Length: 371
Ligand SMILES: *Cc1c(COP(=O)(O)O)cnc(C)c1O
Image (cartoon, rainbow, N blue to C red; front, side):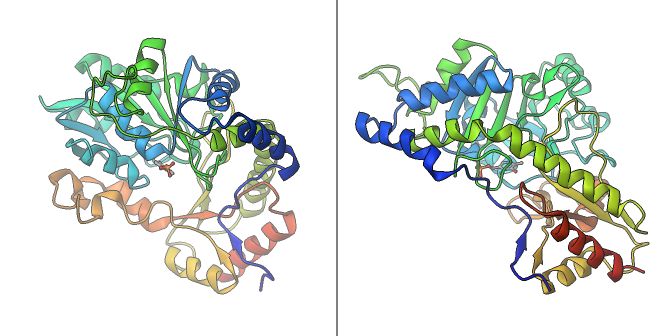
């Protein structure tokens, strides 16, 4: 039995003494929010680090998703994946948009482009895919469909911080991409998020929408929301950014150790990392298939008994929650791959600082419980 509990992730924090001078500056300036100096500096630093043209910071990714849909004036129906965190589809409902669920690819569990066209109707205005586990979607195939049918593409890139595909940052694909800096993500500002966009004009509209729709002191042009990131979170982001390469390096080691030690366990399949040029190892999903002696839920429970808290990302499917399940596209028969994935996937603990000994303990438990 593990001495201390091992959770699926442990938030990454910089040394406190590195953060204190930034806090001192915030205290001295008395500038606490509303696009202050930390906010502006963090936006520039992020754009440079990520290799993207424009960054608009938010207080969290859910408000960023809601705002992204407003910024592009999306209405009607949006094609999306059931295999994600519930905020993806919730952002559509908050905009009065009907989600249309399309099944996922059997290997990487991203929205399957081959199944998108059949779901397009005259009401469809956009596609909202997710780079699940930080593994890039088939961005070229999705863009081809969007171009053919004149649809917008908004990526929920909450898992994809620092991920590069064949041509630079994966965040440069589609019309907009949304990042999350929640405590559980690879890069955190406690709470936080961002919209990545291509030009200053789009960023200006997004910045207005996240500030109640104000364009100047007395003019309001849209029913905007309050989605602003505070100076505290932006300052923390600036410090976190100095450590993110090291954090990603340590995650890569954890990933490699799991792959090496789990490779020969019957019935356990590590989800392949995919074609990313630069990965972020944000999650470590395995499939617990029938060949393994226990079901996924039995393995999950056994690990819990040993103080190891793996997570079933993503279970239940979004499409099975009460506010979605009556939609025709939510029927399990329409989503066989996602339905099976939700029954078989278990995300193992992965974070900087998870030791090889702790990993070996997890792996040996998985080994001895199987057939
Ligand atoms: C975490 C997450 C979100 C929500 O992010 P918040 O910053 O917590 O609002 C949205 N989509 C996906 C896929 C996520 O994993």
